[in-house]
Image (tube, rainbow, N blue to C red):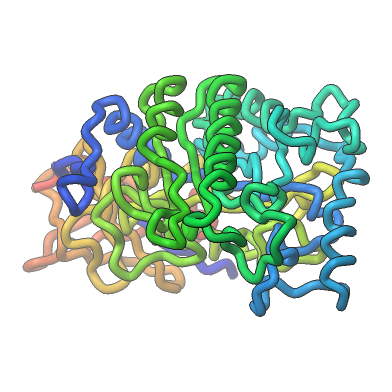
Length: 458
């Protein structure tokens, strides 16, 4: 028997959450950005994709060319120089002839996702867009895929997802390990940081700042409407070796082309981290500001053959926990070197989509409420007045649900999503008891989770 998570939705008046930062100097005031952040918090479920030539080897994206002694920097060769040379040559064989962004968008839409964040450039510096700043790009004649009509991969993805109604997010790595202005060929590079003294060589850093700004301006001007600029590589910040990209000017330039653009300067904080992005976890104490858990569907951010993917039940429970905690869930899938989403990932998306078709009303447009939970029962609310009580434990198939944190008003109709007849309920002291009829328990409207709506709260 499939064990199911149970969700109960109760209508209740809930105030909207203000979008603020802790330090008044870091508080966003642009009404267009604030409006876009409200839109963002309504979306709840998005798709992140790490993809590049590294997918051909099935290795961790970028990190194997970094000289740090970390598990994610392991290499398949003993000779570091030879490895880096072979890694760079992956550009010449990258040829994803089965790339079909329309099919990707359809699968994501079917799963109930509403926005996409794509890696336009990861730390290795390979550009999945038609930049004019470097030949280390997918559209360069030295890349096997350059002659294909779909070779400007970022544009193809953004256009296909936008046409399907998605919000568009551009992942962009601030560090660039291929750029001679970040990792200069004159010096060795011992770690992920710039490999020279910026104080001694301000001319090199000025070139890197110009290079970075030019690439971001290309993305902001040649790829349609962009909702989110998702900047990774938080070690590139003024407080760390003086790695100052000039965020005020960079943000102003980007927003001059994309008014209201959300900017996510990850792990840096301040005015240009419009929302926070906890990685691979649901925070025990969620941020007071807008936030988004980014997490892999499998074990790796990028494509790995025979990767182990989380079961659909676990992914749905994660989505519930994130949303109940007031965040968005950005779920990552690594496309194959041929340009396909792995079959296991498509299976999970389809299962989540079946659940969302019934229960999406308990997910989209919600905000955190107080109290946030009652034991295993998690609460969220939305601006229409609904309060959602979400049980994420393994409850089996109960005949009665008890709630004490929110009590419906007398005469309220209690209905389960996907079930025509209202459910019996009664108030018992300080709690409401909702009865789940046997025929509903034996033939529930969906797998994994049920949603119950109480029409009139007290």
